[in-house]
Length: 330
Image 1: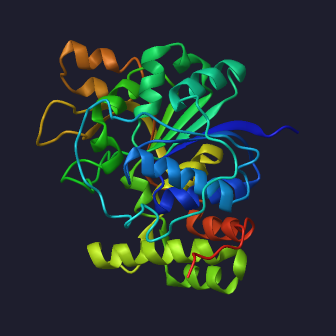
Image 2: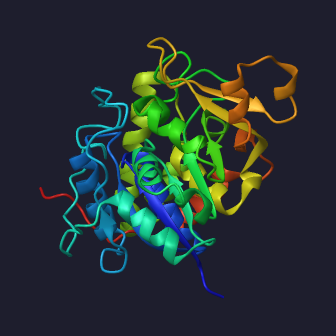
């Protein structure tokens, strides 16, 4: 049976890096392209990180890596160091062995959506700039993609970059609103669910004991744990981006509801807030006609963890997909 075609659109990022490893480890997908976008690090750095990850996970000869949009649609300026100096902690990965692709990420999404119409899944683990840019160029993309799963948003819980906004949505709120209002079939996997599935020091010990093929992963996850300890005072870290990959194959990792997402773009105080209008309750409130019109486009929104244990599945899956043994120089 042929594997399902998928594109991973990512801003690597420590948890983005292991989301790629997890995707490869599931054995469920035919990864057609790995596209980068600015977010956890500037756009050029995330592209370099993506090329390096393709190499160390042994896919750079098979899966093309494409550079994403250089500027967010919202033109938000910000500096991020949560994921370390390079976006991958302190890791500077060797460059891919293949020449750089010239086709930009939005064009790749359009082309693959035509080639695999009705079959293509897109998982986005960074700001939605590339997906929105592709939709603006070709609105028909929304009706050719089988499913978009994106990590982002906070429906019923506080944000993580402001009191109400999650980082990926806040970083390009206009792009996110374009996407959720386009008619594309989407599942939003945000902080409501990702904060419930955690990675801890026991999981790290399993990676460390697995030998050379997991050394890079263990270093990245150790750095990720230290970041949460330092910045949040927590001794575990949430599995934000890997969970989106997991949900693309199996929604039972989360508890989800159908409804409409509207992204706040105009307010400096609440920019990036994802307002969730549950399908079964939207009619109970009085919204302006423009807002009510948005309810024509609904999606699935993860509201909590689900019955299947993603934390356990994540570590088990990583152990099945080692990286190329590699250590930094010196």
